[in-house]
Length: 605
Image (tube, rainbow, N blue to C red; front, side, top):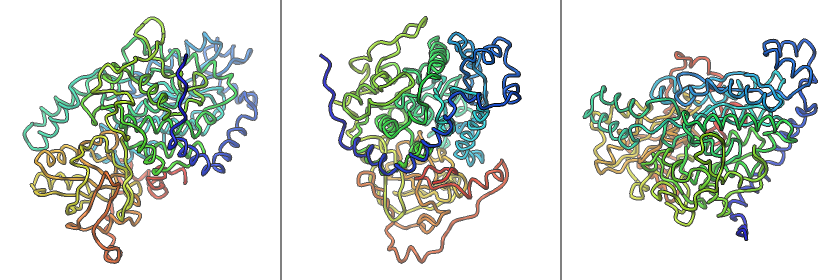
């Protein structure tokens, strides 16, 4: 007898209903647009002979004959392939594989367009990081341009990393009438462990390791094609896409050179060919239940803080209003089931080895923390994703997920979580509201009240660290880093130095209107502070020596200065560079971007 299903967790149900009810008008308007685009299900019927001739001109003769005479479904491929991103380099061969496979299923595929894809690992601490967050919206627009030829009955999105997957998803939702499937490339094999890499970085920050030795360590960690192995934004993307049912089950964490990788890509191509006959598109699949499932998976795995912005923006693209308060409420009832770097020592290859997404999603579904009644690219029901990919390299087969985790230091059941609550926390107070990744912060570091050290650039923090200015407990404030000020760069260069301060026995926290993302580490970091300094937020009026409390447990972020005094202080926002390295091209973005809690997007509130 199958085990009877438990009623959905009360908080999960309540937050899902709140998202649905507050979004009724927005969602109705979005679905009306989707239906308008579907008015003629086969888009090509609307096109003139000249339109079609242009669209078919470069097709191989056999494919051209099929689409003209039969006609067969056409699939548009949108890819973020480039040779700079190790995670995206394997995508070079995918279009040929997809084209070959869909022909076997009476369909034709075209490479519809490429989208830009930048690597935050390359641009950390450089001017390019000021364009990083904005690249998400550029990718969304590029995706729309690729699909706007209106030739297609379905779409395939090829992408992996930080801003790329959210951008592809937002762009795909603008063509919500099309069935759409996502195709990843998988993580690189494990090299130098993340723990060893972090230790070398800390030693370098103290001048104990030479730049040559640091480079040697970094190249041993990031050593071949595939996604970086730590559980940052890129790998969080893949987790969330599986939890949303937007990719083939088990596809997230199979390595690029594993023979099953090609089998998964072919399975995705076969599936999209079948889905062209489906009555619904991705815009209808991505509803409030699917969005909540994504957030629960994020919280259960201690995933990237970037997604508190990305998935808010994705929700809005699908006609929903999702808030940081929703995410915080879900975090309070979602158990933390993984310990993956930077929240632990394991990497995603370890996670994939000991149970992977099938185990995780089964646990969350069995605990009634996720919605099973959702549409996926495989059919109805998220439970389809609780089957584990087998080790067979000759054909794609599935078996039930392991009954028990094969390593409880990496992955645990709901009955034995690492923590009763999820990985993210919302902080509120007179400094604004902020996101904090609590899953990586030890209990003894979760509450700090200390004098502020105020900076306007992360480089100035490093300079102060090297000059030994941090000799007591400190709250390090780095302001003027928000989306309106300079595009909200990630501030990872601070992690080694601030970690060293913890090792010296000091209490230290970071407060910033910038980002730290999926690599947020041991130091409590109140990030995405909203309103940002450049928008008149209180961060612009904090001074050196002001006492600040960062309380991860109570969820408070407070400067101990009375409101009247704070209001009388001069706004200390500083002018930042607006040109060079492409900055001048993004002035319109900086002038029109929404607040971080609304997705930090130029697409409106």
